[in-house]
Length: 340
Ligand SMILES: [Zn+2]
Ligand SMILES: [Zn+2]
Image 1 (tube, helix red, strand yellow):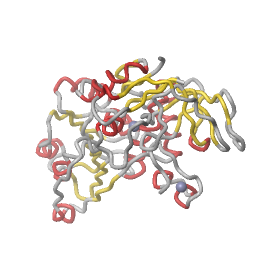
Image 2 (image 1 turned 180 degrees about the vertical axis):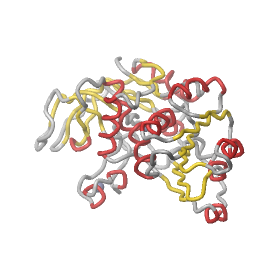
Image 3 (image 1 turned 45 degrees about the vertical axis):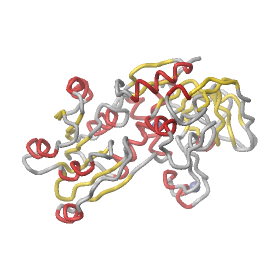
Image 4 (image 1 turned 135 degrees about the vertical axis):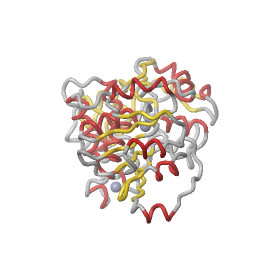
């Protein structure tokens, strides 16, 4: 089969199409023909060598939708021909966290891209427990976003922050793959959304996605948040960038919940304990989603409450271009790879 192999850590040119053996399915596994694969910022970090423990010689990609073409022994809930989305991580399915439905906490988990097998390929072998059937009528390109950007946002906004109708949410990096879907999710749950973007030309897009207010700023937005909320602050914040955490903390209301789920330019940032205490702020990390939250994401896409924001669809062999575009921040939502 054809696969895109990461030859070495470095630029987009390190992603090269190669002929590799098609994986053989074992017991409890299925082989999925990849119909669509999202390009995630995580893939860029891996490619550039910024992920601890990451390897070269591997196939990246963890945002997959496709068709089951082979099932291994002992697989009962999926048959050949099933249309599926693949959960973004490998979990054991047997530990206490998996059995209580918190696959995102499983210690066995690893991203396929951190391991060896990813979705930038014609076929992907995965444990059958990590393949979720698509609702009827959902196309593969849309479904490819259900697990990572949308499922991860469901986890952060509904799971960790437990967003309530009528609350105010701050979403930074708002036109990115996480932010664009969080805006729609928050509106579907009856919240007021203050979106922060670095570029003024994204203002209209963010309003169209449902943002009530848009702040154009690269950091330093807390004063404007303060003005927009009558000096109250926001109840919930989605920190999609990481580097802006200090300003996000200053934007919070008493009892606010900050969920950190992005770390675009990995670095340490200061946190003022006095601010956490004084405002009773809950600071929470979040990543991935539970299987149930991927189903929530699929249902919201199917129902039209969340429309996957797809910048463009490119064939797999243009993966280097996809990475370069995402790196230069010329992308609104996701680039999805489909077709060779
Ligand atoms: Zn992703
Ligand atoms: Zn587990």
